[in-house]
Image 1 (tube, rainbow, N blue to C red):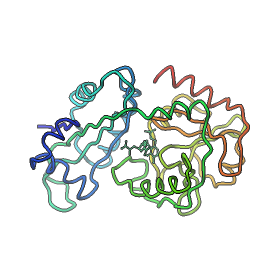
Image 2 (tube, rainbow, N blue to C red; image 1 turned 60 degrees about the vertical axis):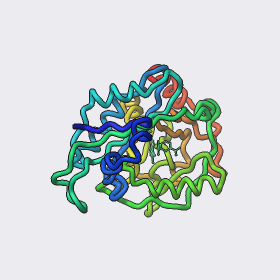
Image 3 (tube, protein in one colour; image 1 turned 30 degrees about the vertical axis):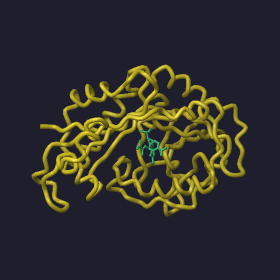
Length: 274
Ligand SMILES: C=C(O[C@@H]1C=C(C(=O)O)C=C[C@H]1N)C(=O)O
Ligand SMILES: Cc1ncc(COP(=O)(O)O)c(C=O)c1O
């Protein structure tokens, strides 16, 4: 039978062996993936995009799909009507020893909810001045795009943000290609054309990035770019499922005095669907 652990059931059963066994592949091997959602007025925002990413990760990792109806109902049941964050983690079921996946049981669903960080609304309105991380992302084509629980690169990059007192920063890969931000995807505008990094060798394919592709259609292209090209852009913004669409007012010394026409268009469309 599928196991769904919510904050309450997990807290109540942590002393038993079952949840630990259910989570063992996550803590032994990082054999799990997740999505973080904004929940507003008792509704999960952009659920189809989160479900699509979770499904894609299950397929690529050869992890059995959970019962989506049961998952959705359990997720809805965690909502209290206020602004919340809901993290859905899918862990490969217990069974095999070592790396093998044959014989692993049903996928375990873990649901954690927490209050929504209100500063994201201020970021959307006022924008943020960001840095450029010295830490570089490795290339990992097998995992590229996936939001697995293996996020030590982001833990280290977030420590760099905190040390520099930056709200966010551009992250490059080992070869100097612009990849994303520490907790968000990145877009920029050159005239009428919009670009975002190609994420076939690394990074996380965000749900809001997917939403931007759907909204922008042929106006957006995934590309390889270096930092000087990003700094020469007319407009830059960040996206994730919690912060929404956030204008970048500066990257280091480079200030953007744009009127943020694309950001405004995206924010308006986003608010209609959030
Ligand atoms: C790790 C989680 O989510 C990511 C991390 C942050 C953050 O550190 O601020 C924000 C959004 C997600 N990209 C999580 O546990 O929800
Ligand atoms: C490293 C990284 N890239 C991109 C994203 C954006 O993903 P989403 O749009 O699904 O929030 C996130 C977090 O959400 C992230 O942690």
